[in-house]
Length: 147
Image 1 (cartoon, rainbow, N blue to C red):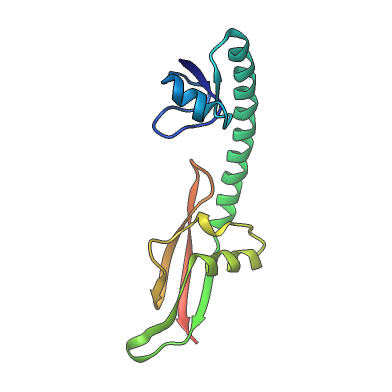
Image 2: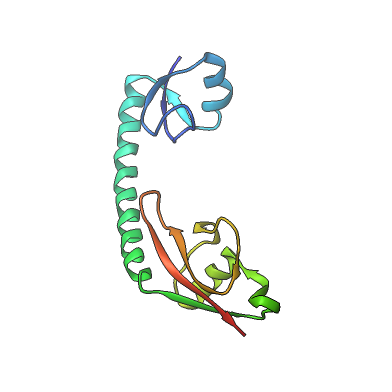
């Protein structure tokens, strides 16, 4: 069965793509979840209109993310933590801490957009990546000092 994807489906295709799938997969998964529609001429026109609207919206979101990235380039966050022997931190600086500190500076960044492979557990300066959009990311400076 041929279907037109209305959303991006992992390992299948992107929005607006016409793909051939098994009848059961389309009937039981894609169509009920409104991830795809049957590939008829009328549906092709409707999906193309939706795709154009989505592209316009996506361009605006990307522009906003670019502007935010330029503002965040100069941001420096400082955290003060208690330390023990050998300057070992009690606790750590997490993505949640960074998101809250950005919120205090009026930058509304979701915690899941802060990319930390593991929490920061040492003193000093650390570069932290923020993924603001699929195509836009920036780095901010996080400084951890003794309390």
